[in-house]
Length: 200
Figure: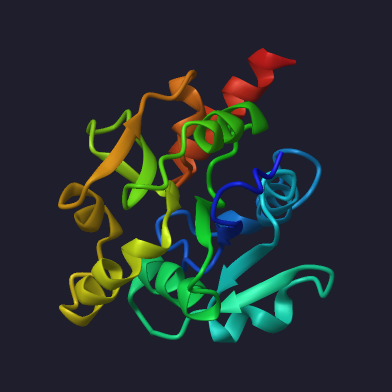
């Protein structure tokens, strides 16, 4: 499904969070028979030239050696550090960045995002069902976004959403808003578990 007429697209699965609210590593939860970070990585492979798991330096030895990784260059800067670190590894490609804590995200939704991609803009993203703002952690970031990301990082604002809100981007409404539900707390974990029970 990779469109060779466009700037090449790499994938980045965010798995470097500390999961403080959850109390356990969200990236290691198993919703589909394998740890979520590996499930997401495998799903993105059909859309991207290469897919990497983003993690902190102290996590890298825990990642299965069958998967490629990019470690954060900056400490305590959240997802913004992961995105900038990915661009520093490859500045010429676009990056499809996806959080690992989205158990309902499916290939149909990723395909919709990729098909709607607009390379002329900074990014292509979804509207968050929580606050109607751009959702930075299910986004295709184009190479031209790097200066804005680096500036935001240097200002110690650490918000990729801020970058999206102040740039020319394409915002999509997901075909199914449930796929954008993430799991940050035990309560949200239970809510997703109930959705899975109703689905099977």
